Length: 191
Image (cartoon, rainbow, N blue to C red; front, side, top):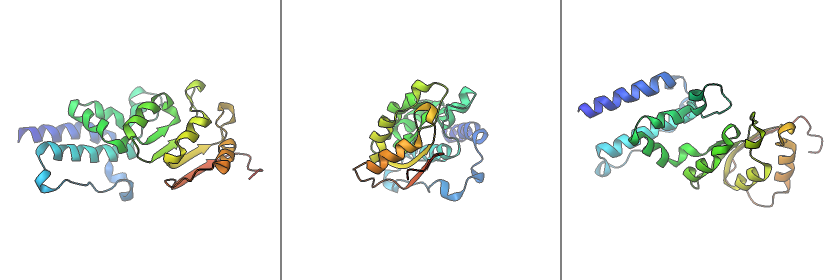
């Protein structure tokens, strides 16, 4: 019983200051899928609760390296550093690693490895360090695995949405997982 009190206190200390889940829309996070009663042990139940908590935090507080403070940049990832159990649970939960944001392009390989084959959300945004921005060819490589693609026109960084649009138009492979696409550019004269 003492362990469950410690777990609740740890959750309260970490999660409550980060996000008020009552402010999230109900559709933003799915209902938890619990294991069958026969499979349920304190550890598996705790892992399921942690996974659900991480999913809520990933929606409410995404990692964004374009933010100022280091803690703010990590977003939900900071909660995976509470202890070994939390870290193991977060690393093993592939759904948490499916958002590829240009603000942390240097970590895409890690995110892709942990996301495994799940559908991706790709948001290649500009950063202050141009070398870290994913290239158009890198983005196109992962398009078949993409469920959401959000690109704004950024000619100065080589991520022009019009070039991506042109490549998507000539892209010969089907995109069965793509459910949402937002390509914004200032010049749509060719489309």
